[in-house]
Length: 127
Length: 384
Image 1 (cartoon, each protein chain N blue to C red):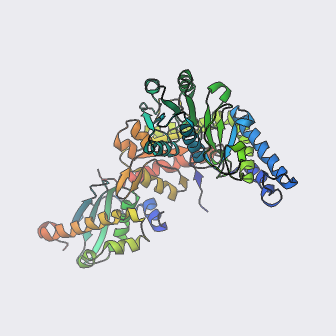
Image 2 (cartoon, rainbow over the protein chains, first blue to last red):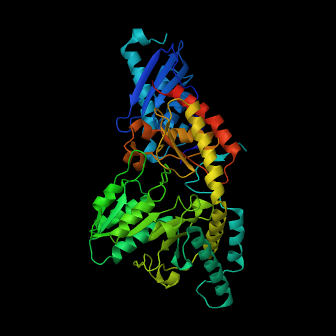
């Protein structure tokens, strides 16, 4: 049902918790099932240096949040903004069809973090 | 290979090597059709009838009262559809509980669509059926009362003797799904007064694909499967001889181990529960106040999701199960825990640990070592 990567991500839960010096924070929620993901991002001069997540959700949501961080750390903000749900699903080696909302919640949290930074440049300026 | 601990024995069990050994000759040597009158057929017949006696002995029944099926679901379906359809008039009434296995619930729902009426009685907060609701619901229109012997999710033992008594006083047949009871707690059909009872071999170290329906002598039901005159015209279809033989052996062994099951397995389960509750703050033991079968423990870790916890434990080598599932973006909660009226956070985070006579002290030690660590990690991840 779940790919080996999804099982590893939920088993190891890398980058869990929050980082106190995040430059960007974004969260998203699926109102139907209640999955919630919060991402904490710390950008350096031009790239994402560190990231962590907190989540309250099913296997798919937890794996998606952890997997998304694997995808984006080391990328520029623009590259992060271009990450799609499909890319994340490929990175996760797939999710069951009825569980893909987990990836959508994680990507929405990323978009929210980056959008919030744009809207509040003083608060979220990665430089 | 990393260590694996299997605590999902209510889903299925490892087949006893002795049962496998008993089955093997019936694939390559004694492969005749048990209905054939030649020697190969009669040897197969002998294997089937020996297994029938073994199954009857486990249940305190007569051999003639055992009908082999392809499993617990078929046995449940055969009992429910069979009784409803043989009732004297159309539109009969059935009584069941809200915590039954889907094999019973879906069969009842199908009967409702055919014009039958079904009463689903409540359970208390420990998962025990409310006897007074059965008493109040039963009438001349009632064809069958069907209440499980042991609940598969929390292990609560239902008051089968009392339900049977209520049904008998009204002249109503009583069926019990004993899939989680047979081979785990003493089941004595001479005492319990049950009219129909379902069991499944793979729940007590027999093979998958075979089960049995106990039909008390004199109880007539419409056959669920029609065709040939197998099983005394009560279940058509060529007998699964190797499976039936394996089931018979599993019944014999289960009967031999029954006392040990109640003591050693019960002690393992009690230790697991006690130490989980002590070592992990905020845990909830579901069905705690009920009389429970010795092999099941249902524990909630509020704030976490059961399915994610299941996957995390599996990654560390521990196989368990959960009653809840997230499907199409919506969480489908356990109907059993919901019927018990538990809090959503308790329902969503419930994990079922089910042990067998093959579970060892070392297995429990390992789970007690791993579980607090996994819960701790997941709580670090949770949104405060």
